[in-house]
Image (cartoon, rainbow, N blue to C red; front, side, top):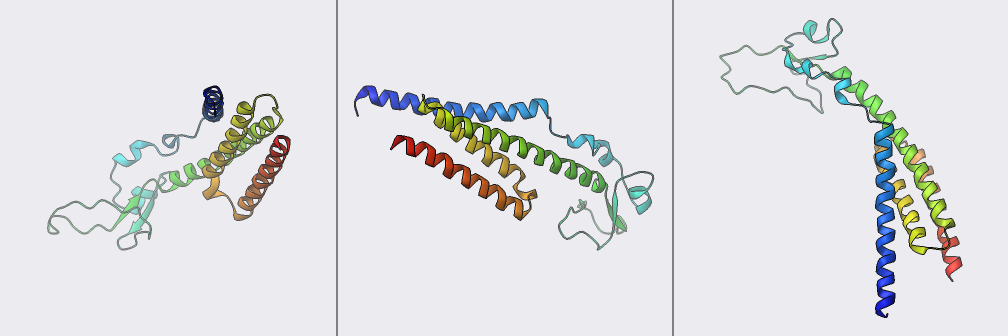
Length: 194
C-alpha cells in the first residue's frame, strides 16, 4: 500500500467513524431536546423523606403514597429501613416501617417504561433510515459505511435501552428484522463491489 492510498484509507475510516458518532449524538440529543425524559422529582417529592412515619396511618393515610410494613414483614428484595446504632434499651422496638416512596416509585417506573419504549421506537426508526440511506449512497464509500454503522449503533442503543421491558416475542421479531435488514444490505453492498 503506497502512502497516498494509506492516507486515503485513514481519511475514509476517520470520516466513517465521525459519521457513526455524530449521527448517534444527533439522534440522541434530538430526542433529549424535543422529548425530555420524565424526572423522578415530578413523581416522588424529595420532602416526603424528611418526615417520620411511625405508624400505618401516618404512612398511608391522607393521600400519602407510602406502604407500611409490619416488623418482620420486610420485602424480600428491599428496601430496608436504616437502623440506628444505639443500645436496645434506649428505644422500643419499632412496630414497622414506612416505604413512603412506594406508590410514586410505581408511577414513575410506569411512565419511565413508556418513555423508554417510545425512545426505542424513535431510535429504531432513525437506525433504519440511516441503514437505507447508507445502502443507497454509491459515490462515497466512507459516507455509506458511516451511515450503515451509525444505523446499526442506533438499533443497538435503542434495543438495549428497552430490552429489559420488552417481551420475548418482540425481542425475537426485532432481532429477526435486524438480521434480515443486515443480510439484505450486506448482499446489496457486497454484490456491487465483487
